[in-house]
Image (cartoon, rainbow, N blue to C red; front, side, top):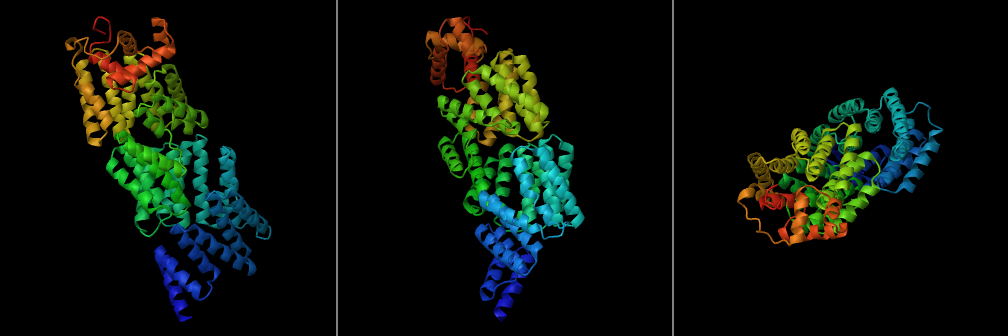
Length: 557
């Protein structure tokens, strides 16, 4: 018995110090010697949760639930029942989760009407409402829970419900109010006002909300705060995986790809246990795929996207962009069309529409690319986010360039450049500057074009973006049209006629009408041109035509 008390004291102390592995081991040893009291079982459960040991977490809570109920402490039993149900729901076992919530609801009839547990059991109801897209009802239920948390002095309920209320408000377009709530929740979490489990949930939920709503400045702050919290608890497993993958995603955006690869690999290798880390696992592989793809490491990207899919993460739109890079154009088109048709919510469509526009432009489906760009504009009007505005402006500029409207293209591309620059998105900025160079060249400003190409090339070189570097290096080193021999090309006469019209920004349908051939034949000629001159997009083909003095039958555009 003495050993049990020693283990129990050691476990309680380790719990207070957030030494989760030591707490779990000592409390488990004490439990083996003599069954723990329900308070200590709850500490054992939380220690297991922080270590990503979901089964041990639920098992300890179930035992605490039974003891509390048998002792007549119904309120404490209801609280345990809620967290058990929450765990099952989060792990995808909805029937078991709903069963525990129903059991807790039934027990609430014998609880005081003003107990805080009434607030906790609003959580499954608002999760259901918001899962169905009913954010008005979600906002109502979270407001009711906030009031209960304030009245009962329960900070966990108060900030869980405040955090979820912010999510509902974000989707309802009430940004200022939502972000104010999120910032206040950050202060509560960072100050240590919440229990360890709820602190982690608030951090991860809020980062998820900011990420899905493209609130990138807030996303950076929250991710830094989460990283600091995780670093103070090196034994914690539960939230570390998501923290690392969110940091990796930001590093991808900022262009620190080596560090992003390091964190994404660490996530997949070390943090694979627990429901939260299962989510992180798929995201980490997707992040790996994106970095390998833009670096030109296509086989490695293919493998990473496959592993993301195996972990339950849809590998799109990255996989479709990879297929485009592999010149598997039919596969890329089918995939991106399918993905766009499946996504119905505006912010979900934002994640795939830029890739859709890029692929459609590469395949000469300029009218479809224009439609995708127009939809991005509509979403950007309703969701005032810098990142969404930048994506919309970039798409408009790319489409305008493909349609032969270089002045319009420059206006939009320079706006996109400015917006992405404020977000430190180096790769996006470089891609845009390369397109600005193409617009300058189309207008006859070769000096301006080369300056833009040089800036883009320097960034691509620093990032290790080999495909982009090879492309823009060719553009920057292109011989001026007047000095290039018009017959230095591998194209047939008909392919040359098609290329000239591609360089003029004409669609496959327009080219078919002018040449009195079918659109299918035009598409076949375009693919043959791409293969022969070593490019994968119409913009690249147009640049080749200008560089080789092929953009018109007279050798001048």
